Image 1 (cartoon, one colour):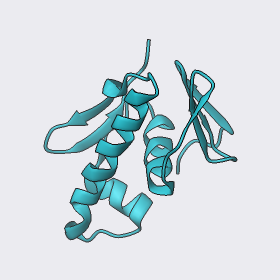
Image 2 (image 1 turned 90 degrees about the vertical axis):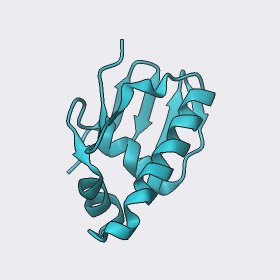
Image 3 (image 1 turned 60 degrees about the vertical axis):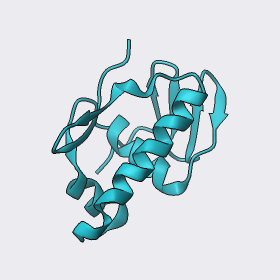
Image 4 (image 1 turned 90 degrees about the horizontal axis):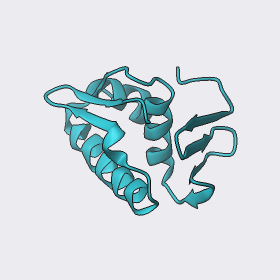
Length: 106
């Protein structure tokens, strides 16, 4: 389960879990429910690698391999939105052949 904290702060990124809001430097970033869930999962477990199957099970509630590319598509859109808001999304690393992890921000 993701972190129980009500607000996750990683550098300029703020994730208000209860309100399901994401902000960068105080400015709201509009994300879809799945993008929010993906960001919350990764940011709530900094440095932990989640496989694409882990993410499918936790967010899409399926293990069906046909949905694997959904994870990548949502990640791509989430990164674009964070970058556009001024947050360096490179802290969300692709672990090649495995999945994703959120690394510490400076």
